[in-house]
View 1: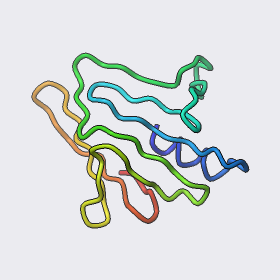
View 2 (view 1 turned 45 degrees about the vertical axis):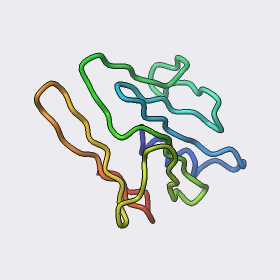
View 3 (view 1 turned 120 degrees about the vertical axis):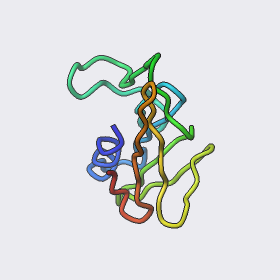
Length: 105
């Protein structure tokens, strides 16, 4: 979803770029705060909610037309990266977002 929001922002010719809101056990992709259709199912909104998954910290990642991310909420840059923790039960791993390029791994 993060890469999708970035790619759509880079290919969008308008001023309304794409964001992904991360909220504890869910995420939601929007364009300028307006719900969009899921790219596979075609249903709106493009979101996922889980009862057994925790995402932290929470906040919004927005991408400009160059794919450069900005962060709001509890998401803050640590050096040149933002790390989002993904926890499922006793297992945990991280998603890393690079500040300049928005590369996500």
